[in-house]
Image 1 (spheres, rainbow, N blue to C red):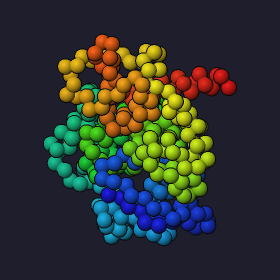
Image 2 (spheres, protein in one colour):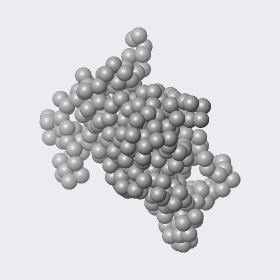
Image 3 (cartoon, rainbow, N blue to C red):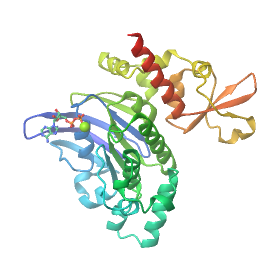
Image 4 (spheres, rainbow, N blue to C red):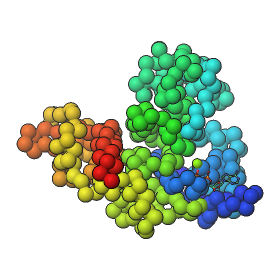
Length: 327
Ligand code: ADP
Ligand code: MG
């Protein structure tokens, strides 16, 4: 879907922001670019929709170099979400969401239905929300509208540049769940930039870790956690405190009562992934990057605990706090 071939970017200042980048982002993949500030994540993302021209190399979208696309068509096919909310504050939620469909000259009915569908997909009451002014919404609600707007015209690709870093932890977690849900529902190719390892691990199907304009390692969360390529990756994992997840088993979450809902075996048809209490928290994180919920078997009662990202994130967050205290 998106292919980088030996891509480099040197800014006019002489700064080598990105060097010799090779990447293959698959159709429908949730792909995360992560790395410390200044490592070239935003530059990489903006080269995809041609907001920044490359210095050397090629980027292909669906096997065609991006330079061969009509720029408007290229961008219409790519939703874009930024950290700072770029909505029109005096317009309503509906007016904001339908900006791209309007440019694409969709019919009024089609746009209206689409706005309803989008709002409902994240459990917002369409009747209530569609006519609200952006300026009357909380930061978290505004960013949620920003995400919906990116999906509005049904683009194949969604680019997200640290979309949730300015939010409080609860809104952030909710938005992460929404995006995971929307990715699963509409099967878009998502390129998501973050500097937060937990965010990367909980959302990404594959993760590319960058340092000083180069890719250090690409892999699934599981591969990166279990086979960090070098000290830089190891340190980065430690900064996100993720390394603890590999030594911990799901039993710990059970002991600390992070699971609430118990499902009976009758609902087995929705149970795509079933793990056992002896499996590691890591495996759980990986499983939750593929499914919105995972089931843990409770052998004593012959039932299942249902777990979502929310519980795992709460557990990881609590873990960081307690480890922080210990230091
Ligand atoms: P990240 O998003 O990972 O923080 P960026 O892609 O924004 O990194 O920046 C990569 C490097 O390129 C940084 O050193 C940054 O200062 C530099 N840079 C970014 N934009 C420009 C620009 N327009 N002109 C010159 N240097 C830039
Ligand atoms: Mg950036």
